[in-house]
Image 1 (spheres, one colour):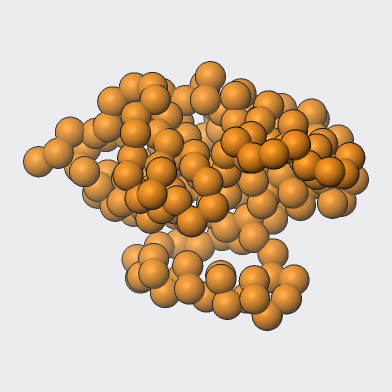
Image 2 (image 1 turned 180 degrees about the vertical axis):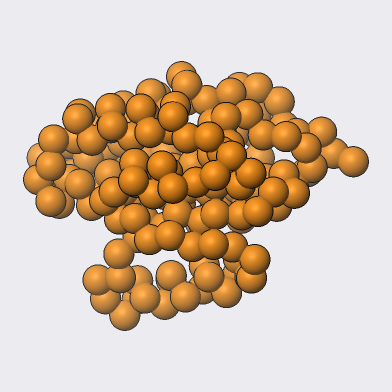
Length: 179
């Protein structure tokens, strides 16, 4: 995939669906300098290993910014020459939920920052609504908030792609032309 990206692209899918790898390929195809905004926090050894694997799989040539909470600030630091990958909205939302922040206000701030970002942004998010209804209130709140955030992102995105079993399916817009 090569070509220009719309101002906002949403790549959504389930766990281990291949969504991050697909989003990385979109950014690589843009032929722009690459900025990776990471939202994960390494709370334990398993998460540290996941983060290390993502870095290794991504390879060199990326400017990495860690922004577990201040995603708006990280986006404001992007230049119009870059292409930005945010991985992922789900961990960002989780971080705010666990910090007991106002999720509606945080989501509104994120959407405003995405609209103001001078670089094209590809944001990765998990689809959490295809499973069973969670048994506890916190998990149900998270699932509902994630669904609302994904809908708001998709409404503003010029390109929305879901990835299932490593296969991308365009839901809105068109993939950049292949050369």
